[in-house]
Image (cartoon, rainbow, N blue to C red; front, side, top):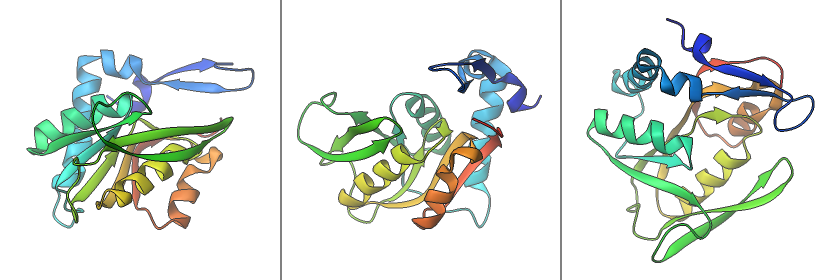
Length: 178
C-alpha cells in the first residue's frame, strides 16, 4: 500500500491555486498510519543512520508522528509549540511564513547541551517552520541530526533552503506542483 495514495489533495485550499496535501486521510487509515510510522522509524534504526537522543515534533501534526516514533524508538519526545502554549520558562524563535512571521518556543530545560535531535513534521513546503525549529533547537544546545517529513513539496523550495543551511532532511513522498 503506497503511502502517497492515502494522502488526499484538496484543490484551492486555503486559497485559490493551492493544492492542499491533507494527511488526515493517511492518519485515519490504520494500515497507512502504521506503515508511515514504521517506514520513518526503520530509517533511523538502519546502520549508518544518524544517531539521535530525542525527537522534537513541530505543532501540531509533528506531535502525532514524533510521539509515535519516539515510543517505537525508546526515546523521549519534546514538543515545539506556537507562542504562548507552553507553561514555564521558554526559549522563542521567530520564523518566516509565506504570509508573515510567527513564533515557536520550547521549554528552556527540554534539551540538554549536545543532545542529538531528530526534528519531525508532516510536510516540507517553503521550509520556514523547519528552519525556525532548527534555530530554536540550536539555541537550546541541541544538534539537529536530521529533519524528517512525510511529504515534500519540492516546487515550493523548502528542501533547497534546508540544503543551503546544511540541514540534512528526508521525506517519504513528494508531490510536484503546489
